[in-house]
Image 1 (tube, helix red, strand yellow):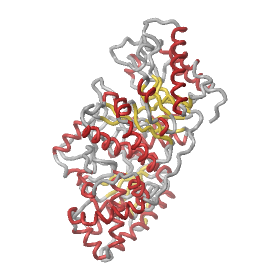
Image 2 (cartoon, helix red, strand yellow):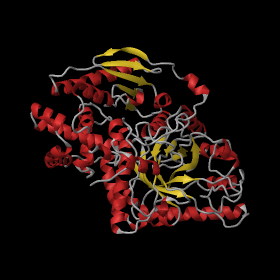
Image 3 (cartoon, helix red, strand yellow):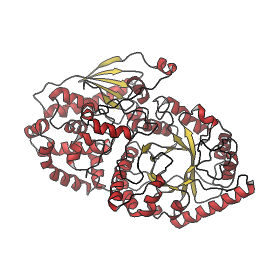
Image 4 (cartoon, one colour):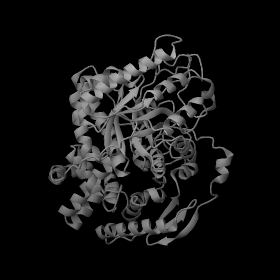
Amino acid sequence: MMFSLTESQHDTRANAAFAIGFAASFFLLSCQSPGQQTPPAHAPSGTSYRRPVIPDSIVQALPKEERFIGEYGHFNMYVFGKVDTALISSVASRLEVATASLVEAFPDQSAPLVDVVCYPTCEVKGLRLFDNHRASIDSSFSKVHVVLNRHYQELTPSAPLEVFLRKMVGKPASPALECGFAVSVCDAWQRLGASELACRLAAADLVPDLSDLLDMALWYTWSDIVAQALLADFVTYLRKTRSSAEFRQLYMHASPRDLLVHEKAWRAALYERAAKYEKTDSPTPPSWLQGFNFSHDGYQIYNGYGSEMAHRALEATVALGSNAAAVVPYSFLRDASSPAPIPIARFPGGENDDAVLGTCHHARELGLYVLLKPQIWLGRGRWPGDIEMESEAAWQAFFSYYTYWIAHYALLAEIHQIDGLCIGTELTHTTLKRPYEWRFLIQRLRWLYHGHLTYAANWGEEFEKLSFWPELDYMGLDFYYPLSAQPDPSDSELRQAMQDILKKIGKVASAAGKKVVLTEVGYPTTNTPWIEPHNDSRTMPFDPVARNRCFRILFDNLHDLPWLAGIFIWKYPTFQRPQRRSRPSFEIPGTEAEDIIRQAFSTRLPAGSEN
């Protein structure tokens, strides 16, 4: 099956990206949300981007230049910033072992030296290069830039091996094989290894056509983890089933069309292995979670996910009593009724994978339960509940796109051992009208990810009528139930409304046999937040105090609810924009609501619960 995602993948294939041409670059730009100000530096030709204006204090704190550490076999290692030399030695040793397999395949070629610059964090790398992905190759394909820290110590980067291959034998007729070969010899690639990931993808029946995998212009279609793992498996198959001379001939000279003759046998072998793969049960969900939806609000590398500024904000949520955090990378759809690829953010400063992972890793270090909660943004006053296709074919296409999109995050969560994954948010028409597709999706995701799965249903009909709650580990509810239609209700009126709503939720939870986590609950700084708790429109009158009544009544009534397993407040940003302090907003920092939440979290809401 063929899809056509837009944005260029993160790990550096500049030459392939330029081959896409003007049409693809136009489509990529058309899919940028307002925060996505620029495509990455290795985007297709014809695109443009603005570098962020970095504060002088941050610039001054950066190292002045890279420093040579030493020659480790075939790799000249440099550092830009403070990087553990023991970690450099460990990774270089694993790379050196991998080069032996590459040299063995081409014994008549001279083994080259490859320059590798190591960075302590994706933020430091991004501020220097305007590319905050874990690994990248420069445009001349001669130098590799890679982040090495304790979070990546088990993940051997394949980019240095791609450059090694290119320097040793040149560019193959099918460039995708270069990446596949490099990944295939990487022990512990993406922690689990390419073979394991390919096997899981086959078990979930998520293996695109080989013609699509070999066309690097289509690598924007699905997750790069998917594409690279499967190509590595294909290369491994060729090496096992062909003589050394035949493999060299195929690697250097076979066109994508020539390679298709091997697809049927490769797929058969892969699916045979996958048939022996067994699922493992997800662990028991924790008894109580309390924290915030931790939102990416910077878009300038130094103030969004993965930045030191974000780390400090996350630490502030711990000081308020959080034991959990929901990390919320957004994607974008332009049309709610037409199926289209759902892009995964790649651009510097955006919610790209490595920025998201930087925050997830820090949250785990702080002892927080991490819920990865990808969401779709439509803009123009629309929301995910507006997504509804107009034909059967369109529905099938939508779920195909959606499946590859959320599968990417499932793999990301599995590789980086993230505690929970929210598989969708407020997609009301899709869940109520197409429950079979959601059940099938959940079954497929269980092959890829072994943590907790939930879904964040919209308040009201979606939550109350959703039919696939039993398939998930806990129920997710975005709690924006109105408490009153009156401009100035009494506290007793608001309290009674809250109690009635909670009783209704308890009945739904009891019928489903699952506990509920309030995946979002919040009130905007408007003068009547109880009327439309979801509405923080700038046209609403600003009032920083009125929402305090709602928060107090909420927390006063969350005690002794056996069906309740947690609460994520909407929202706590990585970076607080000054103008949001004087207009309607859900943000918590620096408001009286912060003290109310701190007090509520300090008393732990359900009586007798344990961590």
